[in-house]
Length: 476
Ligand code: BGP
Image 1 (cartoon, rainbow, N blue to C red):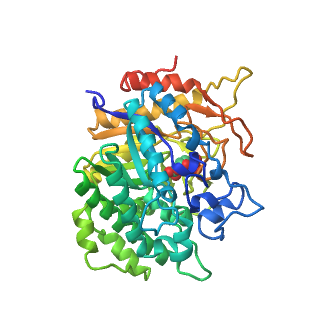
Image 2 (cartoon, rainbow, N blue to C red):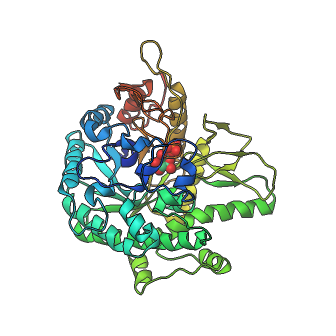
Image 3 (cartoon, rainbow, N blue to C red):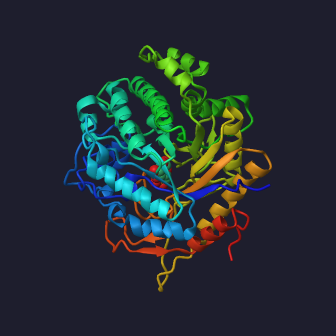
């Protein structure tokens, strides 16, 4: 028994990290556009530095991305050549509704994605569409304060209705919010939240989270109404928390850390706020304003599958003075038993198996790994070849762990899409030199380069992995 026969192998990208064309096709400005590369990025994406438009002193890599807006045919052809069964991409909300609160959508934006989806189907690639991957129209942030405002539910619903109706028959797999727990860690990027001086940030974040959770349930409801074939998933930035040592205090701290993320999926998959979060909010003096009907809506419209990103496990302790290391949005205590990437993200393939088991035990719904990969510096040799054995090594070990979870532990898994199957702008740092792709893009951190696409060594390796349905992971 191996992976399912119709296993969805593929790769993942997000509109703001690859499309570019930020002012073309009638597109409006979004929060993700105004996140600069450089030292201010973190303050901007966490909502602590006000950046509501471009300024002269910063560079904004999302403006150009990797120019996929103009080159998607070439890129999808390469995905087709690798044998992708699925391609995960996101919709730029501002292509469909440039300001976000219009009543009528922008036809040019709708046509763009229709063409793109048709291009995927030419190669037998099933699109997997993230409705919002960190993007929020700037107009909605300026006028309404982003997701802190209940009105967002209405705007998001309008967006979803348009998408499900227009792309009926072209798209079947939908994700409502990318890494929904990111709202707690990078709230401007995750939910268009900018904080005024003295504001109770936790109060704002949890209220905004409620609006996203309600919206996710609304989306699930109308997706099923419009086409019963639609499959809707939630999406979590995952990675099990390990206790730093076996002191019960550390074990408890790691459980708490897991819960701070699982809270979102508990609501999206089980349909109600768990007791531990209600108690936590009460303790912290946070009151969530709910409208009549919210509870029923959440209960009656849970997701069909659980998707998540996995880059690393995390370590938690109550001790001070322990070494920390970077990770996907949240830093962690450094695990002395693991190697790290050049960006300090620790490498833990078994952690993927552990995480899959944790999630499957908790929800018993099919899982979908929609992000996994190694951000690394790739140096082309004198002939322009990129021999990325380190990436092959990372991916093969993670795919093996994923297979163990399926074959040995019985986890039900729909598919696997590597993050950044083509090099793209980093969400965390805005860099180009942090590369994840099987396809190299000639572009550097300063925005110089021809944008030419080139296959790396991992390109043929992944093609073989897909062709053998994950049986042959060797690097030869
Ligand atoms: C996740 C995001 C992606 C992606 C990835 C890698 O948080 O969903 O958008 O970018 O992490 O992170 P980074 O780009 O910071 O290396």
